[in-house]
Length: 496
Image (cartoon, rainbow, N blue to C red; front, side, top):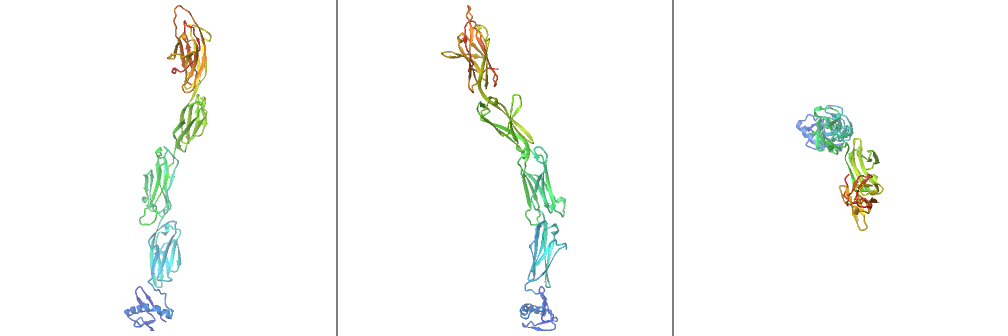
């Protein structure tokens, strides 16, 4: 029986039952080869190492131990120290070269539990950690034996937890002028003492925090940063950013920075309420007008329209932002009120709508109603309805021409030459006229001295809708006999 064993790493050959003749390629039986010199054993071992494969192929391998033809090596994948996220799956693979059927074993450097499962397949062994936990933060050692040969390789596993972006929470709805808290939270972070956080508002850092002072804990934690402030109108629509960073330089993982942003929604009552009127706030009777109300607030204000009566009471009209009135009547004039309302307040805007109405329903009251003697006073009261204010003057109608009685300071002077038919006309310059005819009989008084005392016509016009326009004609004559009618027309508007 031919057998040999040797350790390739030291090139030391131990031959127990075979005699090696180094000068030839033949193997001869001997009883003891262990007595040969060390140099011979080395030379012989080299010879045997070179010739043994062919010999074994020809003569078989009874009694010979495990052999390998290449240098025995071991490696671990990943090749470098690894950073594993807690909750993820991690596999460490230990494999050999130069050995067909090695035996493997895994352990931690401090002989702690592996915290995983081992699967051996041929010349490789896989240590699986699923899921990775804080207990897997160790240096792992893989050992492989091939016959009398043994190799070991180690790898360090660092664990961390930074699985998601920060979360922004607002304690209460943000209302202008009311204190509120904005909190940024980073969930499930490890190691939390390495975490840094900051809150930015509109690009400026409002608050920041480092957690190294809290010390190291072997637990996964949720860390937070809170900003307390009082919202203003300037904060409406601004962006708040929460930035979290886990800057561990000795560990390779991504991402090391995470951030979340949120646009601030600040509640406030209606403001900047405005009303636009088309075509204008002055419209002729029978025309159309459109009024549009705009109000700003959060939440959006609810719009309503009302009309305020002369007594001060409000008449509800619409809940639409746009109010349109077609074929408007004289009664349509007045104050229209737009109101924006939400749970944080209300604001009103008023517009005064003017409806132009022509003079109409003109009536006269003559006092005294019968014939008057020359030199007596006569009063003519004329009433007309109009908007805008009418002007009323007497106008004498003559077959050859029309004479408008002169007027100054609401007083007109007439003489006996004004005898005839007169019209009284109301005119408001924007719309049409309204004319009525009156007739007065004056009995002439004859005296030696002829003179005329002026006839005083006092015109007084009241200028609101459905308010009478008053024309007072005081007629004084001593000599002339005047018969005729008077009516009001275009003269400067009288003072009231």
